[in-house]
Length: 405
Image 1 (cartoon, rainbow, N blue to C red):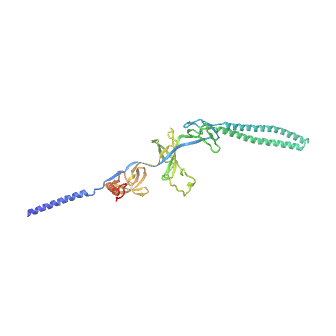
Image 2 (image 1 turned 90 degrees about the vertical axis):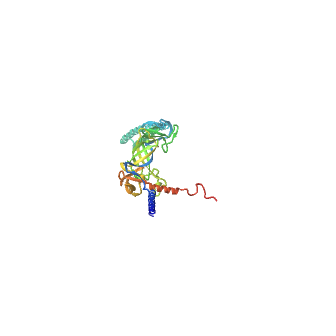
Image 3 (image 1 turned 90 degrees about the horizontal axis):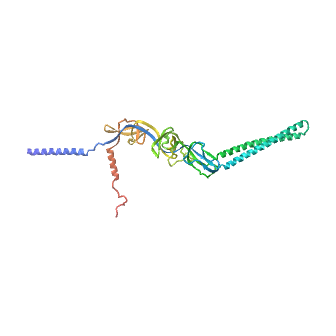
């Protein structure tokens, strides 16, 4: 009996031991594991906040060289791409008509001057006649009417000479105008530059009655102007004298630097109708920011496209974290982030400063070396489960209908 009781006790103890071992095994196997956190350290790095825009290059100084007189373009002395100096002969308009105009003006001047000389000779005669009549009148040897007639002839001749003097002045002006018009048939370079466009051909007739037709375009390529389009969302942050840099599509590895010269107060396409306060545009609005850059080797050309960055601010060796770890915004540059403290995440509000496309400057709330939580395994598992539950294989196959009858 005792032996049977002992065996019973041993069996019970063995069962309890197996049950305890099983409970421990299942608890350890199925117990939820603590989440694994993915973090990034708070590090020091250079931050540069910029506004990106697209710009177009043009010459800082460009002149349309036109014809001030009408006529046939007799010859062009330069070609596209030629470098010219100020005063250099660029083109010649047929001068024959203007030469004849000058000859007519000079002939008219000679004619009026000859008339004046003739009147001056008559004036001398009338002066002598008037003096004789005065003597005779004093000795009562001539009638008073003869003296008055001599006086009238003298005054009339003097008036004629004064009129001829005015005509001579007018004729001289006509000669000067004709000389000027003749000089306009010689098209001279108004400045040093490069011929960037030729708008007329030899033999072409130019008519300048209403406006001066353009023969060619000169540009000084030693300095280029970049006109960058700044969106209305960014223009309020941009001011003159801000540093800028850009590159061109043909040479993306070369960076050109300058300073913003001006920001236009209105869009380039503004019209009288656009100034109405009730006008609402369905498209984005852009304002031109302009700056100049030296171009001594003339590598930069007119109408090149520039990828422009306007520097709003920069900080060296600033505490920074990735933009992706920022949580909810609290306003005034403050955001919520999660920081791992002794293995446990805690929410913390930080103040941010400058930011680029990847990182943001931390002004307050974090120290160098702090570990900011990017994510954890528990959140990732929930996201995966959610995707699986929504992805599924339910519903009819693509392109199929419902069950067939």
